[in-house]
Length: 174
Image (cartoon, rainbow, N blue to C red; front, top):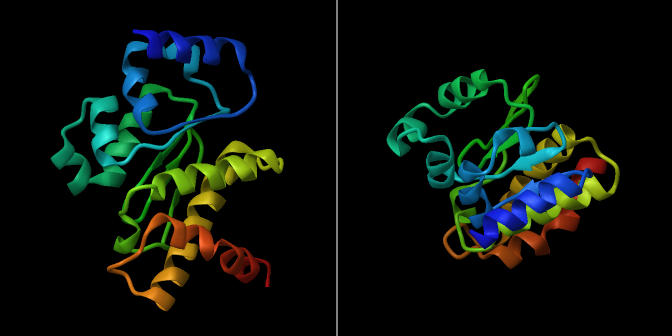
């Protein structure tokens, strides 16, 4: 109950972009959608978190990611959703992006925290919400691909993703 109240206070009083990740996603179901359904909010669930949030069956999400996300947005949603996983989907009410960077070695503790930090950094640099999410997902995946290339996929840890961020950013700029 306290976590729900804290999130409500943040949503009501903080008008700058907000990224909601991890356990905070669980409490969104219990907060009036009118409070947080705005275009400067990014929600970053993995498939299980999205299942709890949306009430769609996890199996349906895994089998039909794009179809489920599009159907979910039929509910007149204004925020940006980042459905993490293979071919991460970034969806707003007006745009959609399916990412092609990243690998299964990135399915490790802390990887989502890295992604959230990258997106927040881009928001802090002035990128609009959708572009920060889209570019953040791409950079995160590219960094993971560089880590895989140099370290192998089986032993990747979240700090490897961070280690290869400069290389990914340099690659994009070139």
